[in-house]
Amino acid sequence: YGYPGTYASSSVAIGYGAGYGDLNETFKAYRYQDVIIGQSALGGAFLPSASLTQFNTIVGTEAGYNGTSIKNSTLLGYQAGFNITSGFGNIGLGASSTANVTTGHGNISIGNNTYLPSGTANNQLNIGSILFGALPATSTAFTLPTSGSIGIGSSSPFSKFAIHTNNGDTA
Image (cartoon, rainbow, N blue to C red; front, side):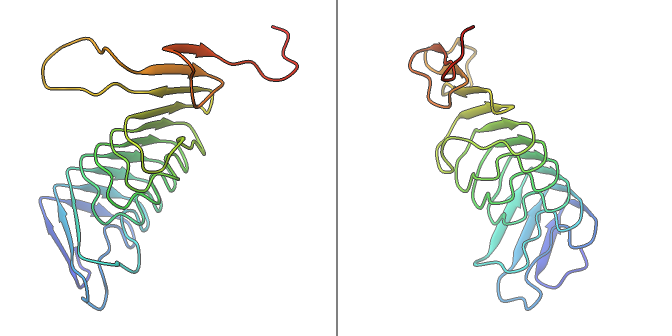
């Protein structure tokens, strides 16, 4: 890391402004075991406070751009996870995936321009803006989930498995 105010340990950053810290060293940016590839990936120009990120794989121009406390996340694609500030364990695959998430954790968003029902909620699923779900809480033990739901065509399923039709749909 060749940027003032940016400190890294066991991290890799490739690309102009990748993993960028505060140029004036007002706030420090600490990167720990991150893989950051892409122009301005995990590199917002103005940090509002000290920044600590760790154990992330962030690939794509401006992916994780506003990240100040992203941990254990995988963000792949142009501006994937752009607004995540303190999320944990999020997966965003596709351009602008998880763009509305700011502080949620355990979310999965797959597809271009996919948004989750809430930017601050946890354990949400959006695949291609057609398949939505509420992921069950997990533990370290191998157990089948007892909660969660899947909705096709709805970001708020009314039961464990719900298919919503559009107005005028006859199928």
